Image (tube, rainbow, N blue to C red):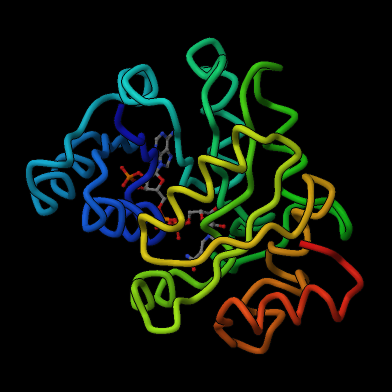
Length: 219
Ligand SMILES: NC(=O)c1ccc[n+]([C@@H]2O[C@H](COP(=O)([O-])OP(=O)(O)OC[C@H]3O[C@@H](n4cnc5c(N)ncnc54)[C@H](OP(=O)(O)O)[C@@H]3O)[C@@H](O)[C@H]2O)c1
């Protein structure tokens, strides 16, 4: 089955491009379906476009590359379709104020991951992944030698297996930081293992294991 990618902006289009380069089938959806169609056309025969509902229905894993405000609307409307699916969440607790300035939209200490996970049906398999580095780094650092690590966080074995597979297909090395309670560590602002919290550094697997070990976590 295909991997659905909902949202084809900075993060969604980079993930889609890397997965297609790794021979994965992707089905793309956006607010305006013509945006998804344009990216699908550019990516070629392994990519297609669909409505949000049809993209979810045709996939076993769904990457929600949306802002948290949009997720609060889109997830409840698609809850039935998400039953049993792996849900991959790159979101940060960020939004925009009335002047267009980016602001934190949740209290300190509350992760976007905890909100997204709480909006899913009980049978969905939730994982925080693919948002742990800036979009331009994600777009430009696939298949490096040594590979760049993308951290992920989940309490769910099926979600972990899918996240690891897709991160590898996309040209990166996966490393688990912990469960959903640790998602905040790989979000920005404030996450110590988000690229922004690492002073912009991209880590290889040895450096990433050392960064985790330095904070007492095990992987
Ligand atoms: N940008 C970064 O550096 C970065 C890094 C890490 C994590 N993240 C996180 O990743 C998420 C996406 O960020 P981004 O920079 O990729 O955003 P973006 O470039 O603004 O793209 C957002 C996408 O969401 C789609 N969308 C909005 N409302 C929708 C709806 N109701 N149904 C379906 N699709 C909808 C938009 O569709 P249209 O194209 O039709 O408007 C657009 O394709 C955010 O949560 C952000 O915090 C971003």
